[in-house]
Image 1 (cartoon, rainbow, N blue to C red):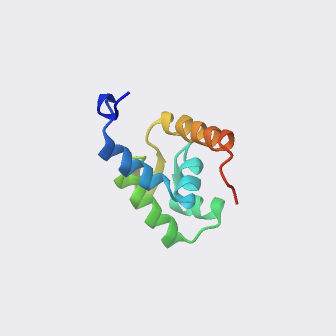
Image 2 (cartoon, rainbow, N blue to C red):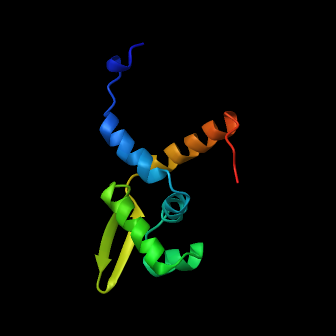
Length: 103
């Protein structure tokens, strides 16, 4: 099949793939996959620095992978769409099936 026959927005797919290509971003996405969490809770759970988590959350928000909710002085993040978690699980399965190198 000719690649021109696929109805895929390659530009949007490339932006998402680039955003997902960072291990810390993947860890953050999985961390907020089931419930809303504050930056401080993400920092605590993942053992990453606050500036690093904030930077990655900014990129995840820019790519529309997380949603932000403000409640008074607090900011909470959650995965924007439950399908993201299934996609990550499918990519993990594909990587395992293909024998992808792991750390």
